[in-house]
Amino acid sequence: KAGVTQTPRYLIKTRGQQVTLSCSPISGHRSVSWYQQTPGQGLQFLFEYFSETQRNKGNFPGRFSGRQFSNSRSEMNVSTLELGDSALYLCASSLVDRGDTQYFGPGTRLTVL
Amino acid sequence: DQQVKQNSPSLSVQEGRISILNCDYTNSMFDYFLWYKKYPAEGPTFLISISSIKDKNEDGRFTVFLNKSAKHLSLHIVPSQPGDSAVYFCAATGYSSASKIIFGSGTRLSIRP
Image 1 (cartoon, rainbow over the protein chains, first blue to last red):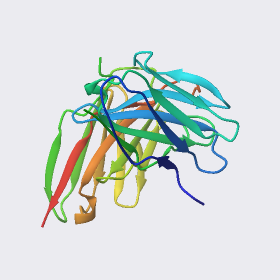
Image 2 (image 1 turned 90 degrees about the horizontal axis):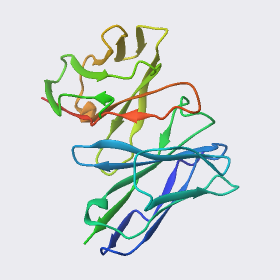
Image 3 (image 1 turned 120 degrees about the vertical axis):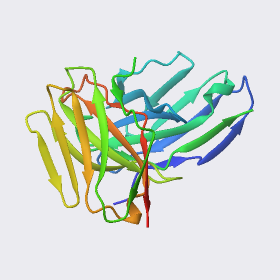
């Protein structure tokens, strides 16, 4: 069974631009969560989608948004990029609930110049 | 407000000895705890979990202990092996689908020969 895939793996943008990251969960997994990892901050929860609905949201500004498609694939969008948005963005999928084991993708490394 | 804290950013242990990684939490609503391991350039991988109805869970060389009264959990790795060198994240959540999964900032474990 294929694992969680994320595209692109690396991305360089400039301040003010917007970016869209993509995540394909493991087949059959319906919950997709997004996390931001920065040095010293660990993994910070962005949001979680289940059956095309945002089920939970972390404490990030409205510039961060996402969606989930009927095939459970998810996209995350960041608008008006800031230097502080440079981070590793990780996507994780699980069967139903976040109490289920989450399987992480390799992440997208975003650098904002 | 860090609800899940890993106060040791790094730990160095000799090969063959026991590695003990600690994690504290503040939210008494958490009832499910997980440990993840992360190698560079890869997403975190699930290691072991424990629910609040237990105080110990063992899987091979890995044992997680939960002390609910102290809101503290620890991961024991024995014996430590070179391949255990990685960043370890502690995470906490509730079983409810309304619960977020909150990660600690991670502890970098180095196993020295």
